[in-house]
Image 1 (cartoon, rainbow, N blue to C red):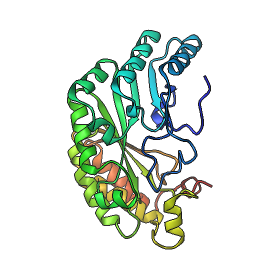
Image 2: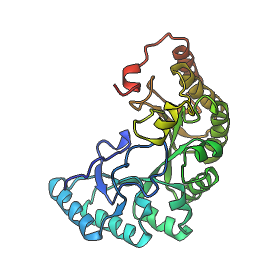
Image 3: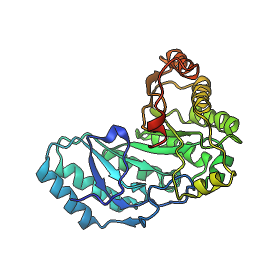
Image 4: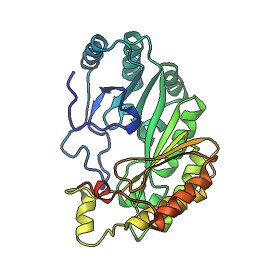
Length: 289
């Protein structure tokens, strides 16, 4: 059951059974992302997926969590996806949760009944890369889903019990659009009310369109203190009722974890200390060296 590389998963899915339902990303247009540049998108057949499930069942029949890969398993039509979920439920009696990355347009294209059936077959969590709440920033970065589409998609999913983990990309607006990125991201997150929220910091990946923009000065990267300031300003503006917040990805200068709104003030104080230079940062990790 070999994984076709590159394979990317959220840090919180480290102990999950990683099941490739698709290869690559159904969009693959974002100028900042180099993850699937040389990996054409393909939906695997049910027989291929079934073979992978059978092999894992023999290795570990006590699987409790499954993460569907690659970039967006919800690009698969509901009939095939439900068949995959059914095989997982049958193979692993201890299974409690199935999760996947998701794009807004692949949720908005589903009916309420589609979403209800996915939840009833143990799809419990979707990871969505909002990146920015600014539509202008998303357009500049050629992200396919719109802000309005992503907000509505998560609100619809939540109505059927599917929780969301939303990813914000600090620095994606560059110096020119940093304030707009912060302001509009606050508005989008307050509408989404995600169960989980994580911040990543932009890393300009070589050979991507964004790297070429940066090389000629069309995109100006934020400095470390500016990235921390974006994090501070976004959190300061949030009005979330029940969210687990994490900022512990390898791209981040400063690892944080908190519950919002309960830990909001402590979180802001920690960020203030980082901005003032009172704590050690991780530049070598951030730069990917």
